[in-house]
Image 1 (tube, each protein chain N blue to C red):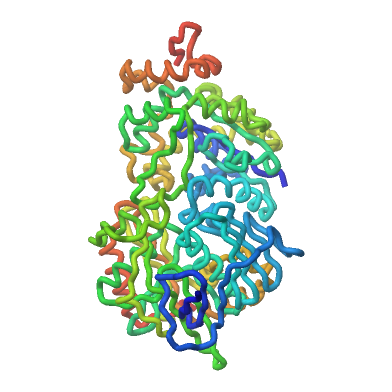
Image 2: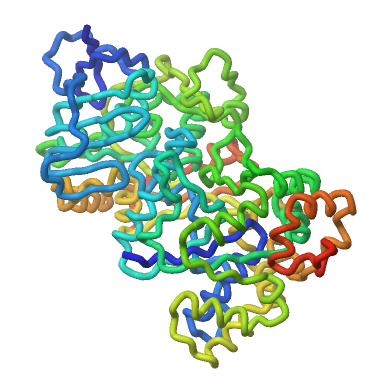
Length: 306
Length: 287
């Protein structure tokens, strides 16, 4: 049995039911095929390796002892050999994050580790490490009527006329219990992502817009232990570094033979997009104030600093 | 590849002070090092550090999976970073489900283990965490002690097992299989030059007596407190009820810890406390 979905503008065939993805009813031939199969313990001639992964041009192998092995090939195929017995929830966690991001890179679609929303002026994206507030901010903007682009991954491409396009992810946010509380949202009935954490997957079908868009602004979120918010527009070098830093699976790109493409693409995006750093107080999470500040900023006609 | 120097301790045992001294020594400047830009950070359990080097996010992994990844994470760091690393760590030195030490010997250059009277640790930790003395004493005596995190939110650090205070000491000093230099916090207070000289030697740094004296002077507690009151300290949690650099003394437990709680710590940790000179032969406190 196969399921057909559309994600990042690509059609995808999967043997796993993925309730978080939008169904593709077009009948188009899939551009990405996910299948179960044998995956080797190691690549034959890896160029680079990391904590639990190996790479060579066109190939990425991820080996997770309690979940399974994943092979991502040539931007077209993901082969999964699960550890038995394991829930499909757990497989999807890595399939729809690390593996899908590598596949996008292999297709030279820049996989940014951001959440984001549609605005009248184009996409507004939020980057930052785990816990910075990416999902919470997006959820807050959905409550204000904005449409969602992604919870933690977006693809950026350039067309033949060098115009930048942001390709949306899928309609789900992952929320911690404290964020759900701050948003006034109940976690009853939501799927728990991992048994050990109060982290829940919330569907957002009604607030999702899968249409590609232009890019208006990126906010890099960080925290400090002072009570002030600081919003600062970044110069070209910091914008470039911010994009490198917030690239999905950036350590793997050398072995995939994509380092030069990664740098060139980040430089191209940095040259034309407004990127600002927003530093917020660590505690308490003053969500409304933060969203107000960002909303007031992105409603302006923003230009990147020279 | 053996370039990681672990600055290991139970929390609130002089680790940050050691990092301030080390930064001053390595900077060799005439002004005190900025306490918000110290060597030895981020801590080994930093979530962002893990996510960067693991290639998957800790928040998608079970506690056991995270522990399995950790030695590989530090190997990745050692492989990609050319200069010596000084990394603060509060975890006990334990094995993961692959039977590997979290802090692998093949990338370790040296371990400085900082130890402090657990009676004072209890008081200091309670002010730092905003939790009660009872809770901190219970944790110091618990074989399954952890760094407490609120389960409802994503903490900035990955899960850290401390074990009890005694088991923490033994995990590093007796069971890690690593070359460990033990430095007592109380000796850093009374004989800073001698204590810090041992640290410099253990880290295989060139020993320069003039530089050592200068670094000790620039790392005086009063100077650090003054910096914190002026510019804040980014490693202080907003849960804390006191400045991070609070007193810098030994024996303050006598003013804040009741005898029942002190007895509880001594009862569970007496062997190791005696071994490191915190109790006499009759189990009476020496500090």
